[in-house]
Image (cartoon, rainbow, N blue to C red):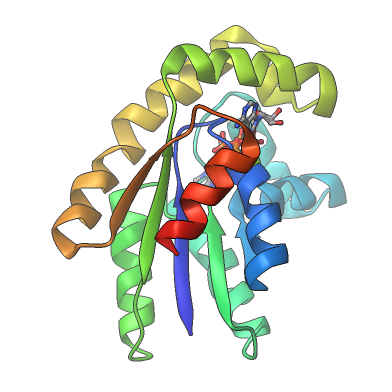
Length: 187
Ligand code: AP5
Ligand code: MG
């Protein structure tokens, strides 16, 4: 089983590229953000807890997202590989994922990091706010909090994966197709 991580700041294009990668490579795409939004839409207990945190641009607790990932892995034993989008997002999540995969004799294969500037994050997310209607896209303060949280909690993962030789950084500026070609080369 292969495990690939799509990494990057909010609005870097993780979801956009994941759709194309799934078509080409037949991976099982797991976006923790999408899974959480489904729980919110269902009005489940988990969704109710997550809503306030997400709408303010804060992270949901590690145990909740790890639980969702465990369920996805267990429910899809025959896929060729997993493409995680937006997970892990903290060093603690990465350590838990490593332990989880090591216990099966497996591990993360590659990290594909799509990097854009904070200014571009702002531009893309503000634009998407008019298209998708995500509440965490609507308020500039929330967007700034998501950017700050990315730098504080998620960026340290770069130094977690680099020494393992798994980190591949791609500049996220360019057309969707250009970025897709760069990711395909890494894969
Ligand atoms: P999540 O849904 O993962 O949001 P995110 O990381 O903030 O990323 P986005 O989905 O906003 O952006 P994206 O990189 O997918 O970009 P996209 O392709 O849409 O998480 C939401 C929340 O859930 C978190 O804030 C947190 O609260 C919670 N959460 C999720 N995972 C968690 C975890 N592991 N732990 C704790 N909490 C967690 O593209 C953005 C826009 O740009 C689109 O409009 C797109 O059309 C456009 N675009 C894409 N590519 C290009 C391009 N090349 N050129 C021009 N425009 C482009
Ligand atoms: Mg996304």
